[in-house]
Image 1 (cartoon, rainbow, N blue to C red):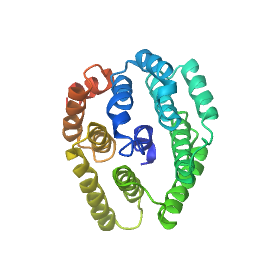
Image 2 (image 1 turned 90 degrees about the vertical axis):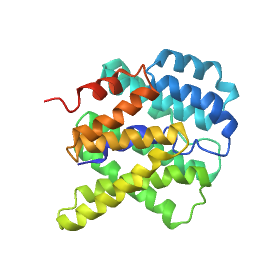
Image 3 (image 1 turned 120 degrees about the horizontal axis):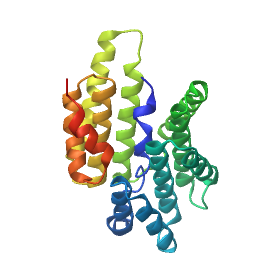
Amino acid sequence: MSLRIILPFLFLVFFVQSSFSVEKDTLVEQIFMMIYNQKFEDAANALSQHKNEMNPFYSNILNLDLYWWKYSLSRTREDAENLKNVLGDFNKLNSNLVEERINKLIKSSYQFRYEVKRYNIIGAMVLRSKIRHEIEEIQNEGVQIEAGRKKLFNLYVALFEYSDNSINPFSIQTKSEACKKSLSEIRKYTEENDLIIQTLAHYFLGRIYLEIENEPEKAKEQFVILSSYFPYNEYFARLSVDLGKD
């Protein structure tokens, strides 16, 4: 198993939480809802219309995630080119050091997912190592992450640890216990009183149960919940119906 189930979704809101809750509760969350209801044109129009009202850091992350999902669901050459262009433009913002470090992690993560989609395994593994190094730097250097954003970071770390432990070739027992611990950590975030965090946790659990744990009924439970959050998302709707069928 690779990080392919982990990275396509999380970094949209990795650090969108807390510190500017008024914006999150309005524009950011509204556009988030548009993207995950697959109302891509509405989301693009909203991002364009409200560009000057939003912090560039957050509008750029939303824009990147929008083009990621368009490509991920269509796989067309046009959407692939658009995604590559957005990734190419996703450079450092004129922001503080913490946000610059976050930008590096975000860009590396989406690049990793893109390379996996096009079966560039060597490139994906190089990026995986880069991502691990960037996470370790943040942890070891004691980068100060605000409390609300810290939840997203901890969720990401739990997902990363699950990924690494699930491919541990040395000890089945150690692997099993470590994976159970990580799954328990991820599951607790489904009970957060925040739509975005809940969505992330349900999505990751669904993909893990589907692709790794081979428990389609448990995966289906997660996508049924996601479909109730995002009734226009055809991808979630299909999985909520089809999983568990013989």
